[in-house]
Image 1 (cartoon, protein in one colour):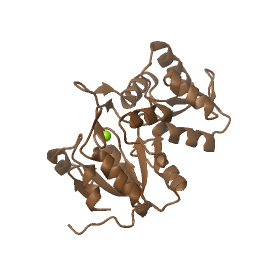
Image 2: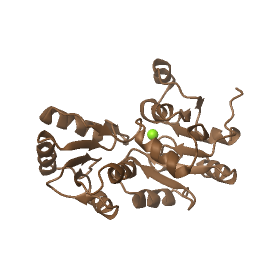
Image 3: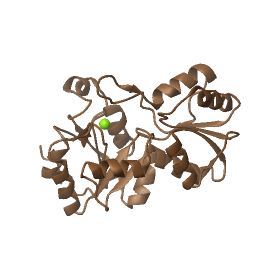
Length: 260
Ligand SMILES: [Mg+2]
């Protein structure tokens, strides 16, 4: 195949299923990332998972031995913060999130309150009934309602675990509302912020991921080049049945060494 990505200036990597599975790196990912950095390509770790802050992700990527100081980590949580600060600066926000994430939001200038005008639904691994009641109350009373990302489940060893998309369904049942905006992949908010931050044009960006309906759809929606990797969730059957078409299909992310 004569496809080449010579003009690519930034590669956005999904994490789980693309760079690693659980705590195991997929092949020579370290070597592949070094190859890209040596070529002057920006490495960006892009995740929808809003249960962790950048610092927590940095720790994880450092433990895996793949993080480099020139890399960027950007999540649906960071895109949500950028979006709130740009469009609703100073508004009171009720975040449904972990305590660490709440601290992070406050540090980033978000005004957190229980009497908020905005509900931000995150992947809250400390979710409890009190938080659900509060969020539901505000949503029914007409607060703006944002969710960090739409994933129904989060990959786990035996059985996939409920993620923010499942919380959205729960709150839909009780409040009869859906989020006004969902920030993360496959929507364009994250992509627009990244383009600005990286100072690149969309055709200079390659999105690499293992999920068609989030990673690849995100790339397509933002006019990025896209590479589907077969090291995670997608198999041939799912790929054939889908109308979301990546620019290229790769066995795993290490094939990029021959393309960039
Ligand atoms: Mg993945």
